[in-house]
Length: 217
Image (tube, rainbow, N blue to C red; front, side, top):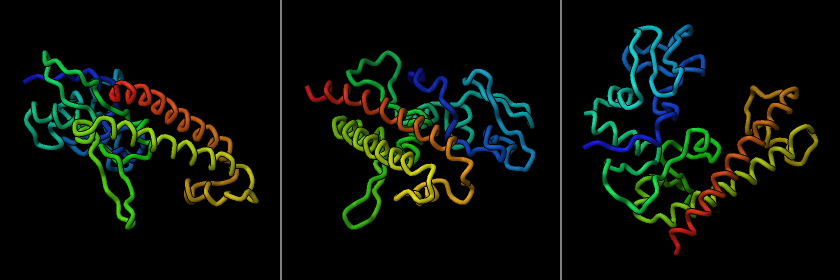
């Protein structure tokens, strides 16, 4: 069975570990990218990824298949679910829109890969699979994403307001957010990054607000 892979066409292969240079990905065939000088896998068009050590070039589906020792069909289903997309066979009709979040959106929303992590009343964490939650209850899925987007927008605003002054009431938030690598000269760069992430969250929130209205009708 063939599946519609359009939604992942230009997405980053976030299922692969980042190489040491933080700019490419570790090759699942030869392991290039794990050493200090390893170049790993890079891409010019976003569709095919080439390893500059072993010279092999693969699509994201092939990379996922190799990494997880799957058949091609299993890899298609697995990689779609990794990105939070409902696997849709080509030619099959469906009233549900494909659900997916890019790597940038997942990062801005503070989601773990492929799932929404929530905190229970007893302090424990529960991870909800994106595609599974959408299939079971689309309205709840959209509502949870919207709530998380609003939560992260508030967090980024608080961090932004704390940047630039060691005496700010919430200055410690900035250091907690960035860790030991942060220094005072980084404030402007940090502010730009916070603005970008907040903008990504607002975009997702507004899009999902439209989708939840359609589901609720």
